[in-house]
Length: 194
Length: 48
Image (tube, rainbow over all chains, first blue to last red; front, side, top):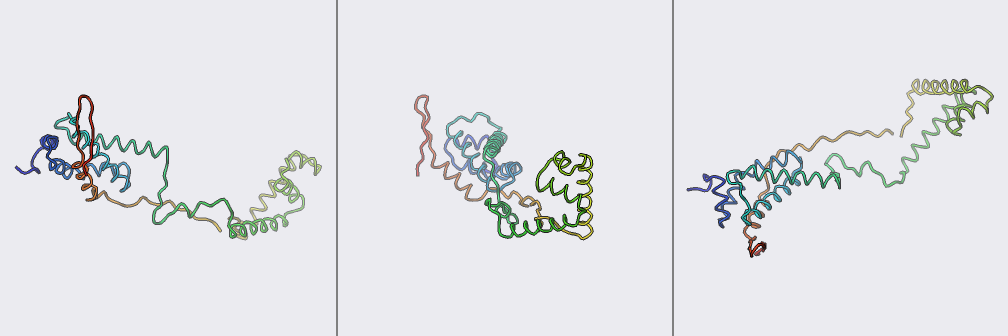
């Protein structure tokens, strides 16, 4: 009788009795289903390969030690082992998350070493210069409040006291200053970003 | 200049089954592994 036609339980028994062909037949018979099951959970070929291998190492050890006692339920038993290993994988990954680079995206393209590049510095100073010029165009009272608030980081209470107006007036001037800045930016399609 | 980000799509792969090397490794592992029992103890040995 060909091994391909033998039931799982019989193949397991043969393997436990020393017939290595029994294991080969079992692996070939169920490899696709087990592999697909693992892949559907981890969605990564290499990890699937590792978990598939670990699954069958557990199967081999258990069978060789004669500890298998679920006759007739070989595939569900293997699937359960695979499932547990998948859970172990995610637990490990949670403790130590890994980032995978793909062909079209590499994390090193967007992370920096903490130092600004020359290009970044130039863009930043250009943006600052543009903002300064825009602020210069504002009416004097609005420019004064905005400068105190943004550049000198004064509170509105301090601004009110310093300019001898009420807090509400200082707030109103700040509001109009921002509205006017936005208007000019929109009107001239100025891009202030880096 | 504004930086443009886009989210990468998952790698479009289909499960093709384990590599032949993985199967061969498992079969070799199985052949090399022998288990010996002594009283309540179990010993695993690998024969290269």
